[in-house]
Image 1 (cartoon, rainbow, N blue to C red):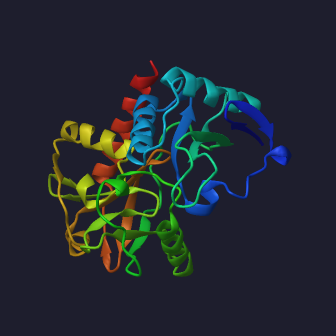
Image 2 (cartoon, helix red, strand yellow; image 1 turned 90 degrees about the vertical axis):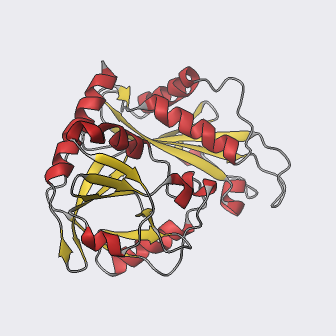
Length: 283
């Protein structure tokens, strides 16, 4: 695999890392995961502005030449280097504050690393088998603005993912310190109850997901009433459907949480809407 480090394509065997790298030592980085399909970067504008917002929130210096056109050019150069220009791919743009300093950095300038890997599907496809999820209660994610950002400080997601693997769950649900439902280890979360589609608000500390935004925009087209409000784990058992969404899979439906089972009728309808929205964005 070839990588793009600060605009230069580097072979895997030649990619080194400084021992004082701030991402390695302090988790001082942010990233964006983007799906590439049909020779286009899905919802790229939304991803670009979310990355810029994340960099501002963590007080990184945004380089003057980091226009949407520049970043897209760097991504496409990396895809081409890995012979993925004509295939579906997962693109990760990692931005780390330059090395130097301890907790207090010597500079707010950044390095970036772009990685790509082949992805099996161009369009979004509904999972045939519904997911089984459980609640993760060992640690809580703190509410607030920083929770909206995709950072390299992801230990709670790692520990929760290990818990899911050890207990044979497809995913687990995270909570904040108020014991309000936030998201899963790799997705935003929605509950559908009647005609109400409910998502935790950004103020609760959930990720500001690009796919979350698209689903909230499209929901009224299905006759659904959108609500962004906090809810407890008990609400999961009262829901008619539970959805998980992210940039790579679009939307996945949950079949089971504890003893409760769920349908997927509206999940399937929403996924069709997402594919239409994606197709229109590619025109």
